[in-house]
Image 1 (cartoon, rainbow, N blue to C red):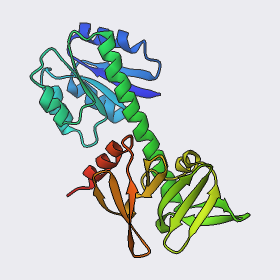
Image 2: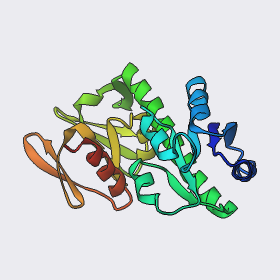
Image 3: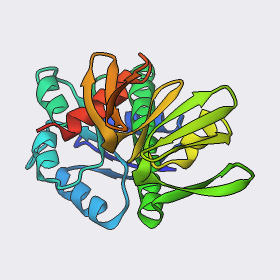
Image 4: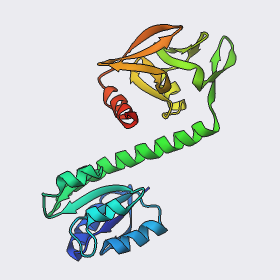
Length: 241
């Protein structure tokens, strides 16, 4: 369940958003706040994932309020004016809704927020698991073989088998890429192609739709599928100086 609050100084605007939220069972409305001061109290007392935030409010505007937050939840700005759009998105807002807000537009923005929040939750859960374990066991050669994450260069899929390429030797195990991907920490490994999962820490370079890996002193080129390229570039962008 995703916890949300509405922050708006207009009661009618609050009611419209609340009615729209009533049609989305995945979102639990925790509170309706008249201003940013009330909203801060709610954020301090509760785990809030999503805020529907009006921009023009007395005392502290929505944009000013977000700038005061150290670790803000997902934000969907709501306003009657379109001249704040650029500044809103510069604050990494999920979306920007112009009043009057139609149900169709509201659902689109909220579903986008739900997808982003759930992805973040999955990533955090995986990172917690990865902090506890830095290895996995796979069945190979009639035994369970320990695979240290730090030893893995990349993983290649071949029908119902996967080949785990390591510095010293490879391991072949009978399972699908999808099943193995689900077991690996997303903070370390990324699917870059329907046939390849790469250890992010082993990437030497990215050129177009190809990543370079050093395998036994030689440069190995792995293809990047078009359906996976955006996620790879987003991760690279976060780590770029």
